[in-house]
Length: 346
Image (cartoon, rainbow, N blue to C red; front, side, top):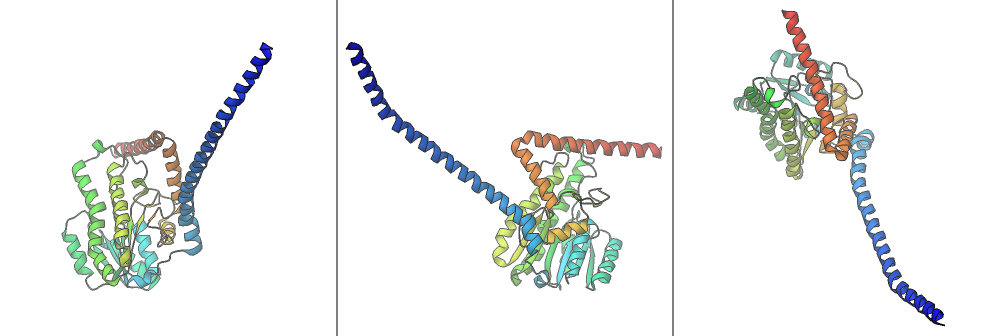
């Protein structure tokens, strides 16, 4: 009897505990399920916010719809800085083909005249050339203002820029103070001063387009191009906030961040799928105008930015190390070429 009473009491205790514990456990499981569901929902929404805009801005929008901006309606003239080579020349030609007269601004008069003749022959539009060294001071902007006083500038392309001859450590830059002063003057002051000159007319007419050429190096690790990359980061940030300020005035401001393009500055001689020609790049970049304020302009460059970003998300240290190794290899090859040339001269 004693054993039976003990066993019965034990079972009653277990039943009592189960009645208390299981509902509490069930509530905990339900809470975990709800929390997990919320987390999955939040992550899914964030992915959709990133993925869908990327697909639309880089593929669907440009490919299916093209630019929503009617450039010829912005004004009779476009002005392009750094217009004698590479991306700047390609923008000048592309805008001329859309019916805009073009002001070409760059350093070398003979090159400006050659490009002007090409454009007038190909597109039957007017051109105007202004030889300017953008590493100079305020006087050059007085000249530009005077030379364009009677022109309706509807599209401004701030393309002029300078970079390193080859990747280099900050403290090893040749003639460092002079070089940095020139680079900052050319890459940063030119963008702000040119916007100061031509934004008022656009705001008054309540229409206009400003395209500022930044660089992919502004948003990815760029050791050994430190000052150049930082100057282009300024251009990107300046453009983004300027776009917000003047959107209500009908002015479109776009920051374009090219990756590798086959130009004299990049020293890439032959176009490839990734390092395209300036003409291919500009054609692609113009198709994004009105779709996005901030773009690499060319979807393979967007893929490059995305892949570097994913590596950086997984491990920022690995991303920085890969870039540093790449830049050091380029620097090493450049130093060897320079040494070989000096040896040949001897």
